[in-house]
Length: 191
Image (cartoon, rainbow, N blue to C red):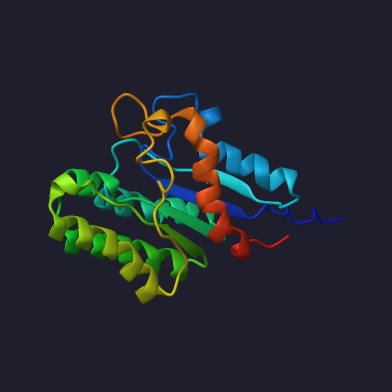
């Protein structure tokens, strides 16, 4: 008798930077781990793969994506990337090109993509901060994929929820990050 094929759990791939890599805290406290726990607790049969790397830029993530798609074959990809591009003042067009290319590649591999929008502090100048924030909504609209309007909504300006570096969310902020992701993610999920 032939062995029955092994049924794989559907995968949610998180492609992110330090905001998703649990920078400055135990990885078990991060929003990605909390997402996996919520999915299990609510009876969703997804496995969450966190491929986030602290310091990652959009070009770095783009370079790693092909192999990750081949290995993980995700049904959903959460793309939380671009903050380091903005902090380094990289060209908006370059960041947008990389994000759109990653969305197109993931869609071609059969994944739906949830794009996490980011914003820069005002000291980068009005033109840059406006264009930077718009690149995420533009990319989501062009690719017809859902968007988290601002990943750090409710956190970025609350210093009780930000680490001493003024950039990274604390462990106490992680449930809020999860809620910011959950609202647009939930309609994408299948039981």
